[in-house]
Length: 264
Image (tube, rainbow, N blue to C red; front, side):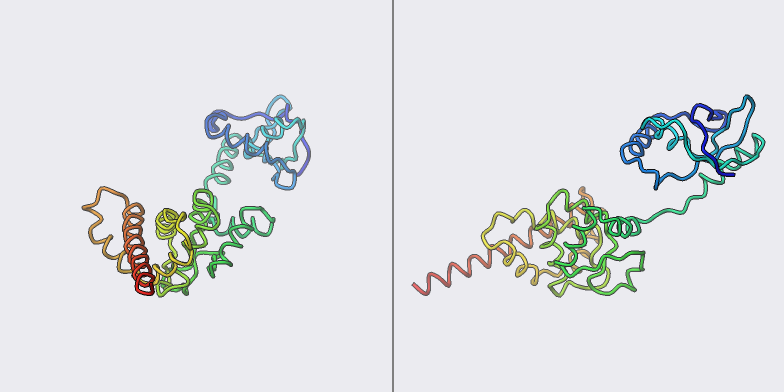
């Protein structure tokens, strides 16, 4: 049965539910900050002594509603003894289907959230296809990626332009192979190419240099000696990429200088 109940009439059975502390408080604050009845699932409750109702599921969103000044919440009322209430709590909260970052991205894009729109634009600029669901690496086609988390992190840290250039170092070179656009490689490329962002003609020069870097070979080489390296896999890859870019950019600059000198 669905009905609106006063929050003052709702109680929590502390014999099987924790009080709201630590991360729970953070969760309540997040719900309250973005409160919207459209996102509010009915609270599952069961009648107990004294005319009250024990919350089986929904303690955090009920508290958030109270924080926002509401005195009642929609509830699904079920008749259950205490043991059944605890079993229902376990069933509802213990079996949760994980939502992938890709699914969250797809939903955020439909909801027109700014970050999802910008990530989509970046992928379009770089000829990258951001998958909406997991696909095994060996079944992906060149240019596909599942690394939405890495894309968001790199956008925040390295900004739009550097992220596009880093992605193009894969998609616009012979490095564009299935499974290459991993989170690790995207982060490493952003770290390495952004260190050259002050160079004149930065984008063209970096992309030209990327054509002469065999990234698949670098990945294999680093993996074979990773146990002997004090740095993590992403940092090691970023350093090797930076060294290769520095060498190729320096060589290209020397060739250009020699060409100008000869013309004089």
